[in-house]
Length: 85
Image 1 (cartoon, rainbow, N blue to C red):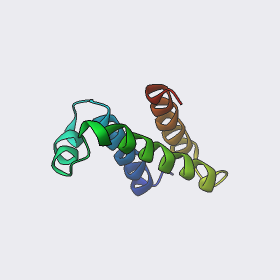
Image 2 (cartoon, rainbow, N blue to C red; image 1 turned 120 degrees about the vertical axis):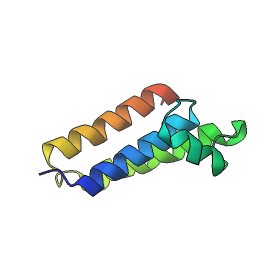
Image 3 (spheres, one colour; image 1 turned 180 degrees about the horizontal axis):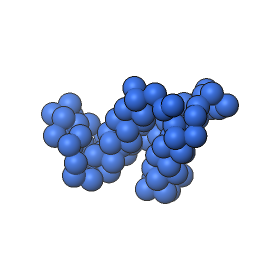
């Protein structure tokens, strides 16, 4: 059974990256308040979130259920595509 806290972490990191890349969602307001959307920091913020998600892939390999693995993989794939990595 998928751990809701783990899924929340993945979604939070992805939302932060997407907000930094200009997506308008619930995370945008708090990211803006935290200074994460300034032009010089936006890509850096998105790349940092991608690095954290990639680290989670490596560190959790073989320990996730199917739902957790799919959500994590989807987040990494989506952000890599957006960042051109």
